[in-house]
Amino acid sequence: MLAAIALIAACGGASSFVPGPPLDVEPEAPTIPPDPTPDDGISLPPGFLAYEYAAGLDQPTSLAFDPSGRLFVAELRGKVKVIEDRDGDGLGDSPQTFWSDPDERFTLGLAVAPDGSVYISIEGDVIVLRDSSDDGSADEEHVIISGLPHRVHQNNGLAFGPDGKLYIANGSTCNLCHEEDERSAAILRSNLDGSDLEVYARGLRNPYDLAFDSEGGLWATANEHDFYEPAEDGLTLLRDPPDELNYIVEGGHYGWPECAGRDLEMADGGCRGKLAPVAEMAPHSSTDGLAYYDAGHFPAEYRGSLFAAQYGGDERSQTLAGREIVRIQVAPSQGSMPQSATVTRFAAGFDRPLDVTVDALGTLYVADFESGKIYRIVWLGP
Image 1: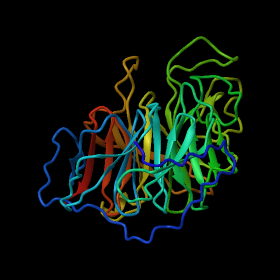
Image 2: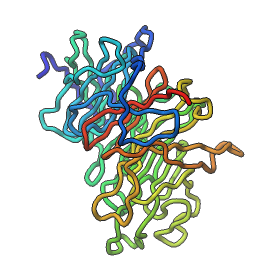
Image 3: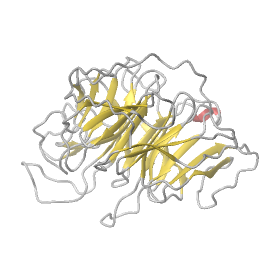
C-alpha cells in the first residue's frame, strides 16, 4: 500500500527514528452545525446533544486529533483512518485510509505527536507513521518498540507526557497470574524514539488508556479480572472486582494480582502497601478510553472532569454494566495523591463505546466499536 516504507525495528533501544519539531499550525476544530440532527437513541444531561459525526468504520478502537484538526481513528484489525471536515459543516467527510497492516494485527492505541507523527500500539509493537509527502497516507513506518509481552491482553493506550516522554499502557498476558515479564500489567515509559524503555508503574491488570491532566498528573483506566476460575498461583479469585481509575505515580504498585479495587484481597495481605484506585467502577463494565476535559465549550463545572468510555460486559456478565460514557469528578486532594472521585453517567445509548477524545473547540467525540460510528457531543445551552 505504501509507496516507500522506512522500517526500523527496535526492542526498546535506540533507533534511527528522530522526532521532529512541533508543527507550527493553529489547531482547528469543526464548527457546530447550526441545526444538528440529534441521535435520539443517546441520552445526555439537559443542554447537550449528540449527533453522528462519521460512519462506515470497521470496529474503531482509538481516537486522536493531529495539530491541524484532522481526526485519526485506529481500527481493530490494523488500519488507521483519517477523517476531515473539509467544508467546515461540522460533519466528518468519508474516512480515508492512512495506513494498513498487512497482518491485520490488533491495534488498540493511537496518539499524534506535536510534530504530526502518528504513534500506534499494535500487538507487542509501537509504530510511528509519517506522511512526508502530505498526500493523506503514510509513507514512512518506523517500529520504535517491539517484542512487548502480549497474549490475553496487549499494549493499549499511548500518551505523550509533559516531560517529553511516551507512555504506554501494557496489559497482562493472563486473566489472573503472576507475570514473568515485568513489562506486563504495567505502565511503560520511553523516549519518543522508543529508546530507554522502562517500567514506570506496576500492578495494573489491563490498563487500557492514559490521560494527563492540566497539572501534569497521569491517569489510567484498568480492567480487573473477568470471571471465577479455579485458584491459580496460590491466588484466591474474586468473582466481581471493580474496574478502576488510577492516579499513576512513578514506581507505584497498584495491587494486581494480589489485590483488586481498594481492599479486595486475592492473597493474605495482598493490598498492604499497594496504591488504591481513586475511583471504582462497575465490575465488568470494561472501562476503557479516557479523556481529560480542560476546555471551555461545556459548562464551567465540567472543567477538570475525566470522561471514560465503558464498553460493557459480554454474555457471561451478571449485570448489564457499561455501554455508556461516565464523567469522573476527582475530589480535591489532601496531599500529593488524589484519594476519591464521584462517577456519574454522562451519556448512554451506544452499542459499544470504546474511546473518547476532545477537539480544540472542546466538544467530545465517542468511538462506537460495534456500530462503526463516531459521535460528537456538543453543548447547546439550556
